[in-house]
Image (cartoon, one colour):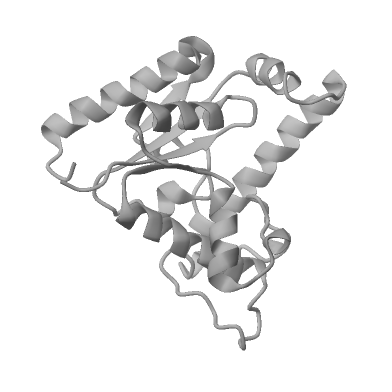
Length: 210
């Protein structure tokens, strides 16, 4: 039996990160979010502040069309571009693949669904919610005005969509990229966790890779 690895892509304010942590607790497995940056920093020796949190600072769309990111090895320290965004992504992708090989886990964001798409046992989830729900949830953790939080939500989702498009060539919100696309406003966080667990149980009955 292969490891059960759940990747969670999420809209800002949808509670995807919360769902991921709750899911990991229920399954008694690790949950990796910004820890991936720390691990990639340790692996590479590159300071963690240089790693962008699902943001793409520069670069043309030509790069993703070559398909050169998913399985590419990171550049060595003496190479030109060692600290550039694309190499930082390669280090994070390397860490994500290692984590999936080592044990069952939950991985939040960072194109993990794409990086691990061919790995047996991977469950790819997209958590989304209507604008008003995302705003309500985001207001709980941001001491900003409503208008500023609305801008933050729009900007964060734009960053994530561009990052995903650049490194995968796919649309971030396209349901075909995921096994499950769940509206957390309808199910609540507990219900969203239950839906994922139910899917895993059903899939184990029919999918010989799990």
